[in-house]
Length: 159
Image 1 (tube, rainbow, N blue to C red):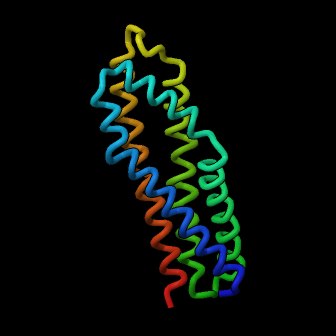
Image 2: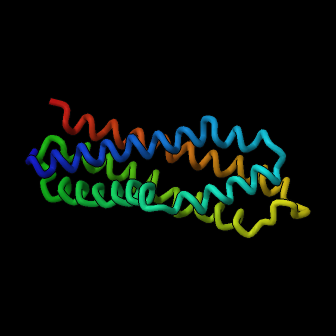
């Protein structure tokens, strides 16, 4: 493995692990805490979180890691005979499909629906309860995919 690919692999491993940790925190205790308060307060707090998460720090980490995985997948496909190539490609598929793909196709549409909901609206309690259940399930999938990607990258650099 070249120095360049090694650096990219370590950067992607750290990025996937950090993203997985953020997602784990949400599934493990943040969403539980938000679900334990009256629904208007939890709904309003999550609406605020969904706005504040769109910042250079998180988006740089999340999207930058995805970009590195695109490069690593290309490297793996261009040099498939290398011992680490299946791990690099597997990690890229896990992260891009299970983290980025689930976000775009699942969590973001749920966030967009929640953004349109008035916290004190007539259906807000049911909408909030459905959101918490569905969003947390998808988020737990993203957590697993991020951790799997980090593990596969670890395997790619294991001596």
